[in-house]
Image 1: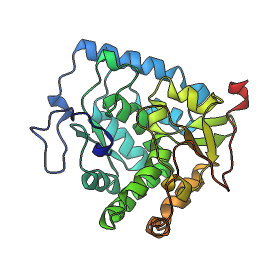
Image 2: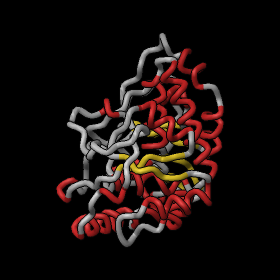
Image 3: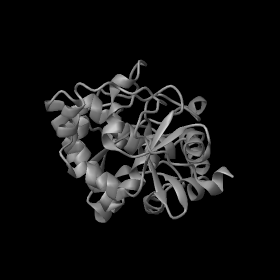
Image 4: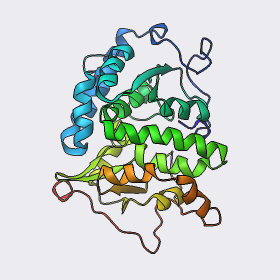
Length: 284
């Protein structure tokens, strides 16, 4: 999402990019080594779904049907459109914030076409095809979550106009990328950064180390985050209704209220925080 979050050179082929930064997936060659890597990544993460992922993600992953190899975005896009009105567009890698939010506002999710190398199996800085597709696309099959993502697009465009993007970026980070939600089965992940990670998914849901706080939008927007380690703080939704209510509000009002309020360091606690525990069944 945010190219400024990495100091590495951008990957991806931008030579044939269109005005909206889309490309044709068919022009990105995938060999058998890529297909094998995809299947290995998928198998690792799919084995964690029952214990760590929310129900909406599990349902969406089954609908996406991408276990056997690198997905054809056009095929999945047709199924996604029928389910929630979203479609997928292929992009070469990081795209400008205004373009990204414009796609979301039109219920189009940008999916990077390049796949990580085998030596990046466990970690890479820049989102690749596996992160974008496996992590994000299943949740878009849920119409309610899809509505929240469309509102992120609309709110993002408004934040750009108001020069207030960093606050909204934190909210996106702590929800869409690294969000947790309470469920009847215990604490579960819905954030793409967690669901596409072999190590941090377990850590976020069940480890005793990180701070887990009840979700509150202004607290998220004040809190710094880390891109070089596991997160020190995770925010937990009581239900997806809380995220829907937040995204329907005018976030510019909240952002303006924070203009003179100090940031909070990752992992720090403040008065008023409400702690949420890890899943008792998994942490035992």
